[in-house]
Figure 1: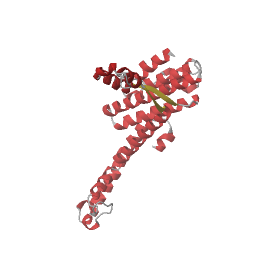
Figure 2: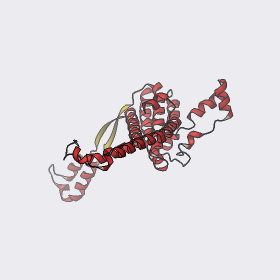
Figure 3: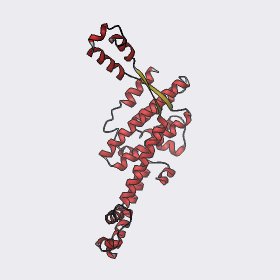
Figure 4: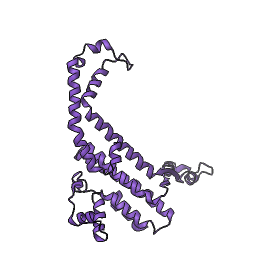
Amino acid sequence: IYCALLVLRDDIESFKPTSADLDYPSRLYAPETPAVADAAAAGTSGSTAASLSHSLYATWYSPLRNTLVLLSKVYRAVDMSVFQDLAGEAVGLCTDALKRASVTISSAQSPDDGDLFLIKHLLVLREQLTPFDINFAAIKRRLDFSSTREALSNFVRGPGRMFRWSRENAFVSLAKDAVPRVDEQSVDSKKELEDALKSACNRFILKSASDLSAPLVGLATKAKAFRRGDTTELDAEQLKAQSFVQTDRLTETIVESQQSVETLLGPLMDKMSLYLESPATKGIL
């Protein structure tokens, strides 16, 4: 258990990524080794099959790989209650590490790369957790020393009350008020994983739709400036007089929108295919 906690702290929670660790999507273009290619073609078992298996997770972000290796090693080595606590902690820390890496990748590469990186790894984490079939919800307890701090401050500020023979005696007040409170918080690391995955998918979908339909979104934004007061109804008379709704301009906007889709959709689909292996996932996005 001690060694597992060290892995949680050093290799997941406090993991310091290098530029190579965050070099996405370049890491996904890793060349296939001859042994892996031969194993894939021949369906060979043994060491070459192990190499093939290794190639499947070689592009995973290190905290994800460390989390899954840790859980697989301790699953049969500790009591189930202990494993559930370790697994819940590991999944929560891994999710946080993936979210931090996603932010960095979004800044260094593009928001699409950051979101797809997060979607890919959270899907892998969710899939690999399925065989464990455990409850990831837990109650976290911690001591709140705010009342202790306040009691000590009152004790220092009131030295004259130390020798009173009453309930206001400084020592009595300190003994009564300095006891720390126990705060309980319900934590479900699996739900946090699902929430992070849903948020990443929504961000990617909204940004992609906005990029693909940018000319039409710009037209709609201009039209909204002619709403009647605080309502959603448009002032048709004023709107008709605007140059951007004339026939030739509308035709031009539609053509621009078509060109935008033709230009951007192909590279976007290629990037999705690079990060995501499941056709069903790509279809949903």
